[in-house]
Image (cartoon, rainbow, N blue to C red; front, side, top):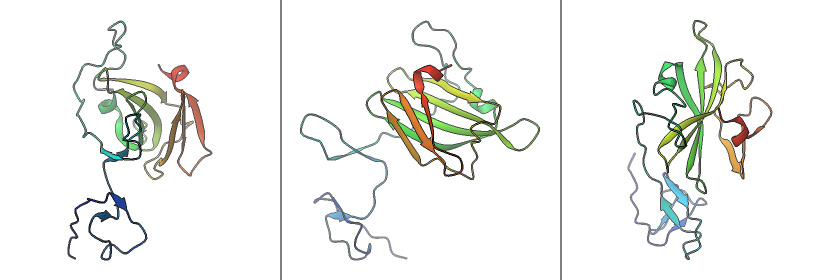
Amino acid sequence: MPEFTHLFNAGKMNKDLDERLVPQGEYRDALNLDLANSENGNSGSLQNVEGNLQLRGKEISDPCDGSEVWTDNYIDSLSNPVCIGSIRNPQTEQIYWFIAAQTTGTGKFGVSVIAEYDQNTNTIRPVLVDTKGILKFNPTYLITGINVIDKFLFWTDNQTEPKKINIEKFKI
């Protein structure tokens, strides 16, 4: 199958036409882009989303007092951890990961973790660690409906009822 290459001069997304019929200057789909929310006239324009940075093996500590918040291999020490959803909050420059992991020795997914990465301080903190199987995170049910509104994190996995937590109250 041939690959279609277009220059995006017009900057217009066209989901109505077949990809073979999309005019030059328009595009059908976009990855690693974010809608700019600025007050300097760029509102409504697309901007690149920065790439990933591997944090494995990095020291993870509380920026306020320097105490260790989460051991640097916590996620690695989970049994078969799988990221099943994520969202970036552009207002606070924080990324939230939803992680499902197997309960040690059972082979079943029973550990659910929500982790927060702060892009300003380059730190990772657990928001919530559920070892009782209450949240029931599972790689079969990806979390695609996620919103951060004020201090609240909302999500759904289309398996269980939608959930809401106060991020600040749940941080460990």
